[in-house]
Length: 322
View (cartoon, rainbow, N blue to C red):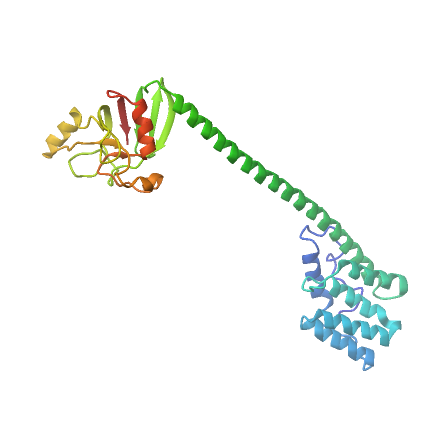
């Protein structure tokens, strides 16, 4: 144990302890005050108890260490300032699960009041000031944390409100859409975004997530390549008895598609549709959009193809972008 009154210059003299609070403060005190014990081995019963207390502390047995310091005080109350000082350090030690800042302050305060001539008096005053300073900072930090937690809970509550409101808006938009009777002007299909949009008078009135051909990148070039076409087409017919619930036939191949296929010496293929799910597989519903599975067509759910067919008459332009 070091000689009292010999704190390294600049260590505890700085009263502005970092906001890391009492944790780093106590680690520093432990290194300075507990290690290298050099007094207390005077051969007296109290001295032996003091050494046992230090041994218990070194083992991390803080409760036993405090018990021994209290025994040493009872055996030699006239030198209790030494034990009280060590007890104050242990009570503020971060590794002590029975840590009590109030009890640490009580120990240091008792030294100041009951032992005015103690060599530990000045150090006790300094430690009391530092601990009180840190406790104030801890309280401020705790208050800030509580405010942040309150704000977080408020934000979470608002997020739930927003989700509920968005759900209501979605329901209302669907009801409005179901009342829409005017045919759309255009069907826009964006392959990369896996999105089909119905457009009326330049405005998108509804969008759908789609599944494409199993080989979706690039324009369709030949029969059997499982690619979805790219270009400008029209809805040329519909089949209400389709193997895929209901289908709208796209006017593929157009002149450019035929020319490209002719240059490649292949058949351009055909029968490209916007359709629903294969009959008897309606239970799959929206899960089918997780992968591209068609032979080049554009797939939506059965309910969605019915909505689309209602507003997309034959002759409606269809733009398919990469």
